[in-house]
Each structure stands twice: as structure tokens, then as C-alpha cells.
View 1 (tube, helix red, strand yellow):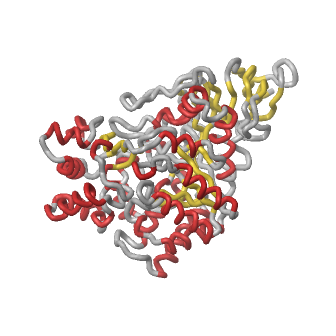
View 2: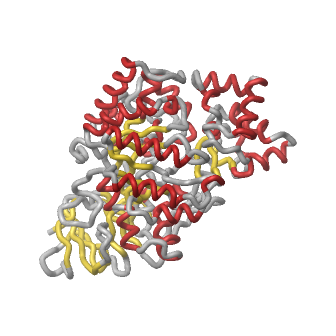
View 3: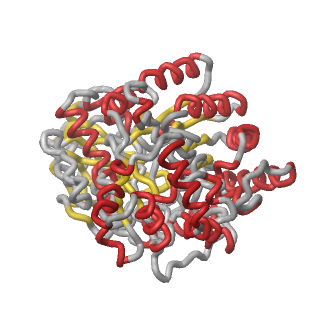
Length: 537
């Protein structure tokens, strides 16, 4: 007798092999039997799901999520679970909320309000990675793993200064990192176009990655450039992995901006050579052309030295405004990946200040024409009036690069999704069904079984999960049931908060979080820890 029996579906198990007709029995949150015609044979169940015409696959693993606060503040989390996501990796891009002290929490919360929002009356009672994971254990919609954010470590120890860490400071950061890994973090992230993480030099990053390697974790860098200097930046990350012995996960592995048109193959050649040399590398991408970040991210790094208050003062200073404008429009800032800013590609995605809501959905160039101002004047005005919380869509991608990279055998899926704002990127609701609909069914870029492997079994291997990521007896029953002919991302750039179609069932630990296409009130997710890769029950 089991809790649940899924009958009549086609099981695609996450290994890359073709699907087979099979029933799946679940008991106590685990898959206990897989076979043909289990009902009435050796298995009876309290509940049966008829999966005729559906694929039964492992739940999708989002290797790059920005749900750090939203997964707690808005536990419904329909955007993710309705896509079939049963595990997401938080703590991305070098800035998050553990480990942290009170002054750093204030600074980080302000700096990445555009990523996480600023939930009212939110309980920030934790300071350690262990404390954050324990908060997740109180009940979330899907499971979550966590990366120690290098930029937060640097902010706590070094501050906002643009200088190398001293020997004592580096040792303190290494100690904090080791403690976070001991408490369950799966690795370390960095944001090397964001302050203050970008102030770390290669030597500092190598030393931190040596600690990550000692604990069997991986390094997930947002590197120094995805634009003019992208290949050089990828090369630096590969050399860090080579020198430190640390596994490397090249997150949102894109080749964007005009200088990189058609150069995805050059990145893949670099990765292939490193793999041949024995470097452990994986990647993730989102299946869209535009990227998303904060409006302040495109500023030159010198302007942010000293913290957010110092930055806002510079944005109001005529001489600093003139210098920033020149670098944005004539030279190309490090924040904008070395590329000259094209204001026609910068679309406002979200604002905190309700007085600015009319800017959402418009480019900076269009807003400037409407206001009779220069684009730079609109840019400065938005940043100051919105207290740096403005988010943007950046229309800088190339389809040939997206397709080439997603076909590579290192590839996994990552939404890089910002869930807040008036007009978030549609990847927040549509990443995983878009892979299945657009790139599998419509274009045939990936075969269905191979795509599911990219989204399940392969990322589970990177996370070193012994019993997740596959439909296999003894594994956790994190499952998604979808119609391969009907699955579709309904989210668009004009209307981004639209639930995907063709995904009627999603189970986390055998508990339905999506049932007949609707969100249940279940919160069966827990933190996934590096030390045991088991959630605390």
C-alpha cells in the first residue's frame, strides 16, 4: 500500500534516455516502484493520478534563482513551481543575506532591492547560513540550495573600498566561507560587475575557491564581463578553477552585446579545451535574448565606492554626472560590460517608488523623448528618485549564441529570474516550459529526453545530489507531469506574470504543489544542504 500511484504516463527519467511507458509508485516522499500496470498488481495506493498522455519527469532544477527573500515572504511561489521547478539555487551573483551582520544587511538589502524587493515587516532574525537554511526548513514551496555570496563576505570584512584585501582580511573571509560551507552551502557565488565583489582580484578569488574545493562545492561566478571583454573574463574564471582545483559553474553563460554576435562557438571551444585539460565545468543559461538586472548595475564601479549613500551623492553632483555620462555613452563602463550604453536597449522593468510606475515598460531613450530630456538625465533622475531600486530589461542577446550554448553537454537551465517589479522578465514564469515548447517542440534544437536531462539529472550531478534529479526507485519524488504537445510558456514581455500551460501536476517530496493546473497550499520544500544533501525533517 502506497501514498500515491501515477499511472499511464511516459517516464523520461532524467538520464537522457528515451521515455518508456511506466507507472510510478510513491510512498513517504520517495519513489518506491516503477513498472508496467502496477495498479491491481503488486501496488495499491491511497490516491491515483492518471498520467495518460503526459510525460512523468524529474522536477526541474533552477541553477540560478533570485528568490532569496521572495520564497519566504510570498510562500505561494507559483511563478516557479507552476513551471515544474522543485529545486532552486539561491545566493547568486555574490550578494545575498547569509552570512551577514546588521550593517551589512542594511547595505545589501538596499543594493539588491531590485532583485528581492523589500518585504514589509520581514523577519531577518538569522545571521548565519545555518540560520537562513533553518528558516527555509520551516516550509517553502520547493526545495532550495544556497551559495555563499563572495560580495557579501567582502562587504562584511573589507567594506566598500576598491583595494586588495589584506592578508588578515582574506583569512577572515576564508573562515566565514568555510563556516557557511560547513553549515550546508553548496558553493560560492560572486558578482564581479557588482560592488564590492568586483574589487576582488584574481588571487583573492583563487584563495577563496581553494576553500570551496576543500568542501566539495563549486564556484558560480557572475564574471567581470559578458560584453566587450567576455572571452577574457571567461578565461579568468577557468584559470581560477584550474589553479584552485575548484569545480566551476559558468552561470548565465551568455555572449551578449554587439561585439559577441556569433561568438558563442568561441566560448564553447574555450570550455572544450579546459574540459580536455581536466577542469570540471558546467554552465547554465536562460532561453531568452534580453537579460535583466538593476539600472544602477550599468554604472562605472568607481561611482559606487563608499556605498549607496556615496553613490547617490555622486549621481547628484554635476561634475560626477558629466564623468559618468561620458563613460556610459562614449567609453563603455565596467558595469555595462565594457560596452557603450545604447539607451534604446534599456527597458524599465520595475520601480519601488509608485510615482515612477509610468516608466515601467518604456526604454530610457523613449522616456527621454517624452520628457524632453537627454537619456542620461532620465537615467540619473530614475536612480535618485527610486533610491537605486529600479530594475531593467537589457535587450542585448543573440539567438545563434543562445542555441549554440544550450546544445553543449555542460549545459543546465537557470532562470536568473527577478520575481518583483511591475514588469519583470518573463523568464520568472516561463523559463522551463519555454525550453520544452520553443526549443524542443517548435525548433528541434534539443531532443525532449536530452532537454530534460539538461534540466534535471545534469544539474543534480553538479549539486552532488545522490537521490534527486532522476525518476528512479529510492529517489525523492520531486516530479513534474506535463503534456509534451501542449506545454507552453504563456508569459510574455508585455504580460509576464502568466502561468505556463500544459503542466497539470508538480510534486515536491510526493506532495502536489500544482494539482490539475492549480497551486495547492502545500509547502513541502526544505533546504538542501551540502554536508548531507538531505533536508531536515
